[in-house]
Length: 378
Image: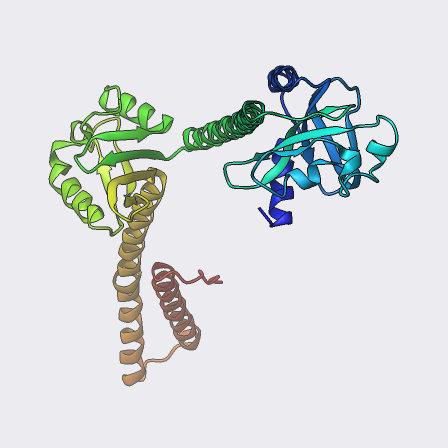
């Protein structure tokens, strides 16, 4: 109760009261004035500079400077403070509220003590002539002061709950918006995404997955379905093996052809990714598939082209060079037998040049097969 900063923090909680609470407080101050037989009764709050009247009867003043507040003495104790004659009490006989208008002469106040022990103000009664309270009146004033605190605490709690509710609603709206955006992104993906629980039950899926299952298997994908129902019989063993690996916490990826030999044949690159909860426990597997049919078709075409180049290289290396080798052999025999004629050297040069060109073509074919750039053969 002696910690002023904490007391002021408590006062701040009750400075703004709802209208319904103010009406109830005014009923209480009216009752206090009636019980104590005084023309004035107040509910006051004392902050660092001012004394605020949160409910009142018998006055239209809403506040006074704290330095002249009688309640400064009330909040320093737990019991009801009764001053029969303010002019005869040295604590108050020079107070402007006593020596000047409104010429207060009698004061009695019960401290308003919160549940956490801070005296935030008082429920007080004032008279303009000397007066006193009997035991029953003082007890009633203290009881009413507790009811004032209860009402103010209730108001604060209701406001806190309302703020929490608004914050919760705001969070829900934010989460809903985020989920909507994520779903939009999720559904706009061309890849198929299916979240599967530990027992192979479908937990979530995107639009592409639904469309793929419908177009390829003519089935409607739904949450709770067993994913095996959408797995080709020849692949169930492999699928189960990869799924079990993911459940151990390790991601795995593979490529496979679906609906082989049918008009719906396609290639998929599928990732099995473990999904964990906040405690790190694997609760399911995210099965994400990307269509790689175009890439596989290109790879197949490249393979066919490589085979063709290999055949060309063999033809070039053996079939084309065989007659050239024969010509070179004949020229060697003619040279050994000293057979000479005017075009011999020219023929020999032409045959050697042809052999060199063929060798170059063979080398370019080999380089092309190995991924090198094709040379220009002149």
